[in-house]
Amino acid sequence: MTIEFYKQKLNQISCRQYIIKKRKDLLVTDYLVKGQSFESQSKLDKALEYYEKALKTDPNSPYPLQNIGFYYYKAGQDKKAISYLLNALKYPGLYDGKTEFFIGICYLREQDKANACKYFNIAKNKKYSQVNQSILQSCK
Image (cartoon, rainbow, N blue to C red; front, side, top):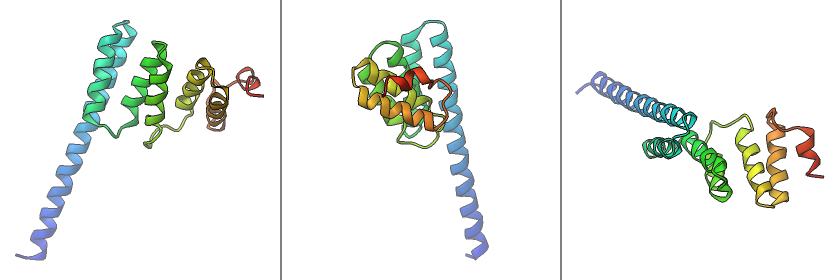
């Protein structure tokens, strides 16, 4: 067998891996969009079901973790929200400070001012627009 044969086989393998990754990304996006649609219809249990499907499809994606965290935030389950949102930050992709802002809100509701301020400041440094002076005032 020639070197050209091996190059062709490697190229085929790379192409398959790329297609598999793209398919997974599209499936995760589809689940998240469906979950958000259910959430906007106030079908929260159905929304969570689709967010969990997205997470099962790609456990290394921050977006299902973030959506599940926001779900628990809205449900007033701050400890669960914090857990999912912190886990989402372990993966690349969340750069706008939104996740840190909501972690701060959850910590504030849990009466943990030190951690709340820590995450508000991270969100501010990432230029998240919702971090305003009144929120930062509570950190002084």
